[in-house]
Amino acid sequence: AEAITVMNRARDLGVATPSLLRQLGLSLAEAGQAPEAVPLLEPLADTGDVEALNALGLVWSEGGDQVRARQTLSRVFEADPSNPVTHQVLALVALRESDWTAARDEAQRALGLNSGLPLAWNYLGTALYNLQQPRQALEAWDKALALEPANLDVLYNTSIVAMEVGDRERARRALRAFIAAAPPEELGADIERAKELLRQLGG
Image (cartoon, rainbow, N blue to C red; front, top):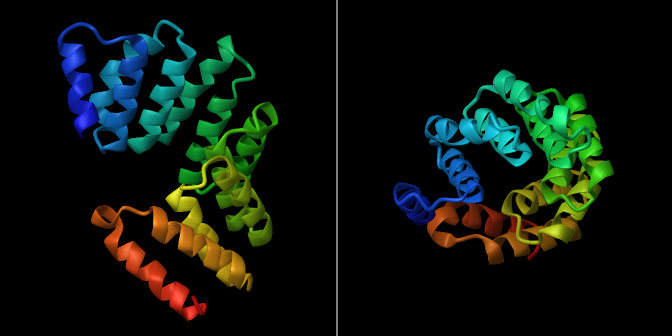
């Protein structure tokens, strides 16, 4: 919220760069204000700015319009046929449509172009898990955590799926890391749940 306030102030003063406007749009979408983000990003996207198109596609997806998200992202390929971030966002769109095969394929395309994308590894893991491949999902999430060790969603998912497949040590490591990294003021209930799971696993 504080970041959005500062960026809005910069915009009001007429000193916001395109990069800042893209970040403001993404921050608004993350805060549940996707409709407010669209008019910020559309003028930038209309210039063919690839980063703005990716951001606008993500905003449409965050707002629940997966069809428009995909239409926006397809425009990127006119200028940049091999953009890994576009494939990463398309993987997220497919996940939100419960199209696990498409999500897997798009995440793999993203990673084939840039293996250093933790979100793409996360999306790949989620797709693989829903395709009944939990061990392969854990391998993908390991790659995500190697790039972004404090990703709370990946840590929590890893702990649950590791328990499902009987990998108790991996589950314990993920739970300990989750408890250490999660902010108590926001995720207090999740932390307590993680602590209870850890107790069930013998600490």
